[in-house]
Length: 286
Image 1 (tube, one colour):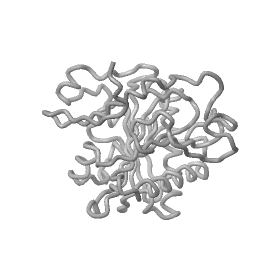
Image 2 (cartoon, helix red, strand yellow; image 1 turned 60 degrees about the vertical axis):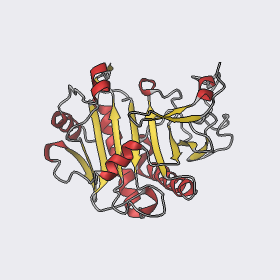
Image 3 (cartoon, rainbow, N blue to C red; image 1 turned 120 degrees about the vertical axis):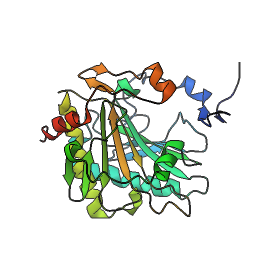
Image 4 (cartoon, one colour; image 1 turned 90 degrees about the vertical axis):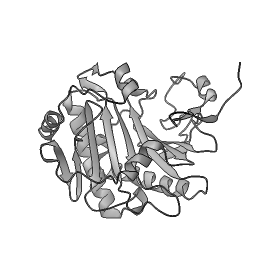
């Protein structure tokens, strides 16, 4: 049996990057006892508000993978943090982006979260992760090359806004539930945001995540990731910070599986009308 633990390979025809991470096969699916993220647990021995640590089961070598704990409260949700708690998370995201991005071997810092076992989260405690890449990943590179900017004409796809920040359903979403969040004035990355911008982002995220959990009257499994300016020394001055939030649920507890034809063709068939989703979320204001 091969002893390959970490190796990056590129498909010779498609150019797809694949990280072969054999070491992660041995990681536990669930903690054997207790929650490692609660105070006194394996990863959080001391009391904390927010906390980060290097992932014990990294997808890449070189201390490029980190875990971010949003709160010491095991049963909390992102929206239950309130604006002050969410602001602490945003500040930590920004600090880690700046720290990791200052490394010569890091070109892109991706902040993300998987919430719920339906999208692969094995620990329920509120947390996210950060990957620091030595290149700009393909999807982010394509968005940057395409000159992504906020949808200022979302119209019936608009959901909510807070003082210069907006959330809307994309025009052509791949997932049945999908939202984009961004500032209307140009900001490139988390560390660039001033106090007022961070407060507004925190307020909008709390609002959006509360609506998402009201959508089907139960906790919604979701994936979230933050697109921001690469951390290379030059270029990408027009990069526009934005957040994508998606869920595979097309109705309560009903998972929309991506079919073979969709994977094969990279053309997707979404049963949820974006304007209808936006209307429902607008009606779910707290």
